[in-house]
Amino acid sequence: MTLSCNLNQQQSLFFSYAKALGIIAVVMGHYSWTPITSFHVYLFHMPLFFFIGGLLATPISSSLKSWCAKWLRQYLGYLLLWYIIIAALTSLIKHYVDTQIVLSLGQGWWLLHLPLRYNFHNNSLFMVAWFILSYGLASLIFRVSISLLGAYLQSHVVKSLLVVSLVGLGFVAANYGGPIYNADRSQWYLNVATQTSVGLSFMALGFAFRPYLKLLGNLALFCAAASILITFVANGSFSELGMSWSEYPNGYLIHLCSALIGIYCLLAVAYMLSLLRKSTWLCTVGLHSKDIMTMHLLCFVLIDLIMVRLGLMDSTEISALNHYSSENTWLLYMLAGLGLPMLFATLLKQCSNKLIKPLWQTIAATPGSISKLKQGQ
Image (cartoon, rainbow, N blue to C red; front, side):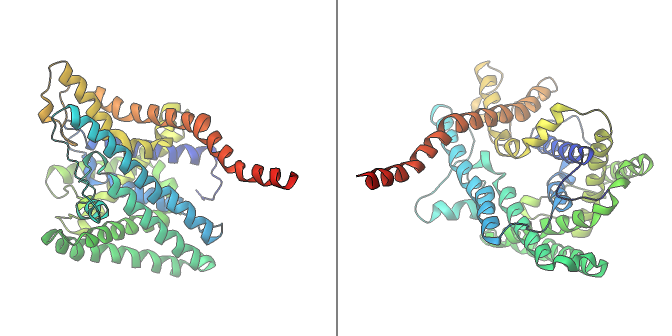
């Protein structure tokens, strides 16, 4: 399968399904109870998004200035906006309900330093901000790199050197930068650098895998990969990685193998589904994957508050990663973690289109109108 900026219908479905299954894995991983034990999502769910980013990466086609402005809005602007929104909502919740949700914003310089120092866990319902930052940085570096290389990427040697270099960077960061950071977590910049470097390695591998996407449709290969993953997890050879805190207990290479096998299995499911009838629901989930990533922890807490009201849970048990859990409520929390962010995002978009944008356009047009009036006088 050859990729370009213009995806055909099957390619578009595949990437929508891949993002949808990936974000479902994230939501599942952040809930306290899951029916799946031998195929744990923490093996691969965060590297997956970097890998998909590599599959979709193209050289920058617009001017560098306009692209950088878009990047700032898409990542840093988005991060800052939702950091403030979720902090405000968390403050409101904590004002009325006694919980274990962490919210410590600091003052002055610490307003900027605390999120980086504590990996955004100081605003715990938005702890996923670490991923938005590291993915944004990895995307910036990778897109600029392939743009600078340009036509040289047609050479297999140049492409191989790029991939090997970035995988080597991930190896050094995970095996050396990660342990140094975890020995002294005040060195937050090492954590950000390690997250970004490991993310870049998966992005490069995704970029390299583009010509071989049809392998995802090989049922025998999928069964073999799933069997290997389940077996190695069961005997303890593969264990979870902690990308957010730069924790790779088995070493980079072992975690690289386990993550790639997990990524292959999930992408194979997405690929096979894309060959069947279109699923509007999965497409919608994939379209809103960023919204779900941003808001699912907050939505879990909203359901927790209902459980508190029903007398099924004590409010002091609620935290970002601790929620009311049972085999009977697992599906409810999954649907809330996926569905409510999509609902809120849709409402916010409609509000923006009907209220904010017209108001902004009116304000923007006012100076011109005044100028015309002056000219008329």
